[in-house]
Image 1: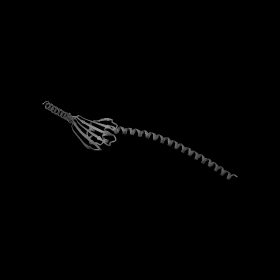
Image 2: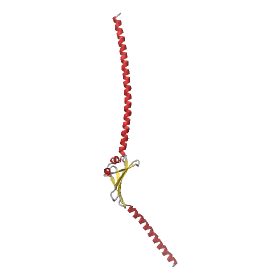
Image 3: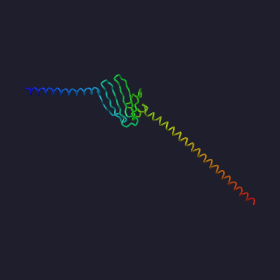
Image 4: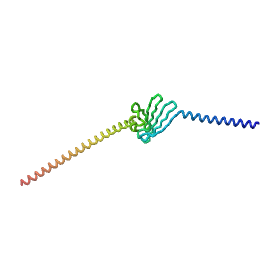
Length: 183
């Protein structure tokens, strides 16, 4: 009888433990499901993927990842249940910039370059490039001026030499004519 009672106690204890583990696993799964109620990924324009998720509080997050854009790596648009929208753009180097107003209206459909321009990633590079071009242009102008001055000096020198030689030749010719006329 003691043996039967021990076996029954073991079976009941085992059943309770098994059901407890099962409930704990389910509870963890439910909380994860509530954290991200809906997640969907779709192909976006300009070689990108757009992942949309909504959390338990109703905040919708749309993340657009660019696979081949040279300026930006991703774009994150967050909209709260109250309709407050924030848009952040991340450069390839990890720099983060916010876009607001009309520039953020269609960012999920815009090209990566247009978004980078709106965030100021491309404009900054363009200004740097323009400044560099002006600097190079000034250097080239200075070198051209120096070269032209040198060429001008050499030309003047050459003309002077030609004039001197011509005058010298004319004198010799004049003397030769004089000698020919006056014996």
